[in-house]
Image (tube, rainbow, N blue to C red; front, side):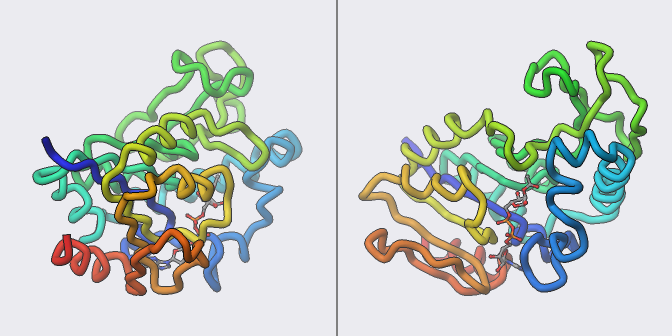
Length: 231
Ligand code: OAD
């Protein structure tokens, strides 16, 4: 039986593809106020601003490609039973070929109902090539169509599925996350005490010493190459 390898990824894995992270210097949260563009109150206050913010993110996503780190994560499916738990709303893991992905914070290429955002029957993928939505677009239930993004203060429906994956991992690899945002950051606590844990990040977050985490303080691609050699 293949060993279980779980990745927990954040914005840093997509940085080398050209997608701006959130909290690094020059990051998105220096350019926008989180409460304006990533909260339900911000959306009620100014749907146009929020719609445009996600349109820009989608336009950017259409111009970039997965990088070597995404590709190496996908390639490890040849040898391991891999699950990718990602905080990213981009689709670069999918485009690199990963087949088992849990998106904790939603997906940029999808829209949903404002009334019932997590009802699967309301979630729609935008057609290939379409990156723009409008504030007066409607979801299937007739309510305003909003981005399928988990905003601050909203529940994270996929957290239990993610915790189950982390809790059964033989190897857990955390890549490119500041581990600032809960509940995602708390997933580390679900790791088995005998799991091997790696953290790949050029500026690694502080992690509990008792977990004996193997830190690879490198960018995602170089760090993934090292990981593949060490596994
Ligand atoms: P952050 O921007 O908070 O953290 C990015 C991490 O990536 C930092 O630890 C950087 O050191 C690291 N990093 C930068 N360049 C890297 C590279 N080339 N290779 C590897 N790592 C690199 O992003 P997240 O932790 O993903 O939520 O943020 C978590 C959540 O906060 C996001 O999902 C988003 C945001 O608000 C929502 O939008 C709902």
